[in-house]
Amino acid sequence: MNSDPAVPDAPRLDGLLLPRHVAMIMDGNGRWARKRMLNRIRGHEKGADAVRTVVRTSRELGIPYLTLYAFSTENWERPETEIAALMMLLKRFLKSEQQEMLENGIRLNAVGQIDHLPADVRSTLEKVMMITQHNMGMLLNLALSYGGRAEIIRAVRDIVSKVQKNELDPEQITDDLIGDHLYTRGMPDPDLLIRTGGEMRVSNFLLWQIAYTEIFVTSTLWPDFSKEEYIGILRDFQKRERRFGKTGA
Ligand code: IPE
Ligand code: IPE
Ligand code: MG
Image (cartoon, rainbow, N blue to C red; front, side):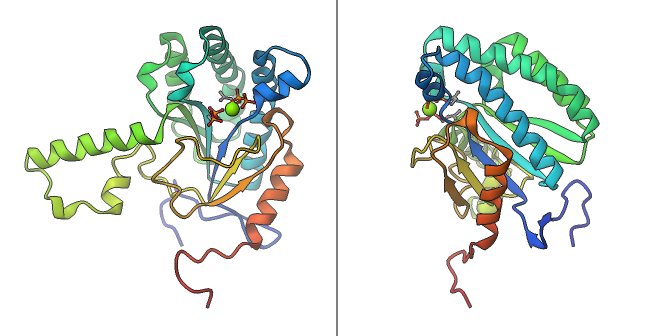
């Protein structure tokens, strides 16, 4: 049993364990729009509805940690108009969802280079993080200007500077110590990573943390991702045997 109330035990569905931490690469908004001869930005707009669905469903099921890849360090290389639209949509989403987050016990957190975000988005984000900070129902982690390599570089710099100041002995560098220097400090590693849009790659997401994560790729484009499909993937997860390098026995 877990004694820390901030870290709930794994929830169950039909008696079987659900993941404690689900991570998602929300991909395919642009293709969803292109198929309809729409501007890519319309795909991102529609994608916000799928985010809402996934957050609600995760909360209903009692999943304690949900991490959503919303914007990568590489996404800064997209056209300025698309970046501006994504930032506007992010701000709009935070404003429209803050009440529901409060009512449903959802704590908002961000992982990534938050200081790279436009000032208005950052202040909205920080405000929602602040007002939801005591919620314990679920941690909603938004990966914003996030890159797994940048996260590891930041951790290495931190650790090296502690070693240089003699605050840390190199012998003390362990898995746990590195984990404690990542944005996801204090959270369990994802049990399940879902990628929509069909690409068989991790695109610089949670590189350290997904060492033993179960991966599910669906060709469904993110704006079409539904509660039913999500639950189907969770049921698939429940059938998997996680061996962590050991034998099945
Ligand atoms: C995911 O959809 C959203 C972000 C990366 C911000 P995309 O915009 O990557 O959509 P596709 O992959 O071009 O279809
Ligand atoms: C991954 O999608 C990033 C997010 C979902 C935020 P991308 O569309 O940026 O990834 P690639 O370009 O297909 O690898
Ligand atoms: Mg994409």
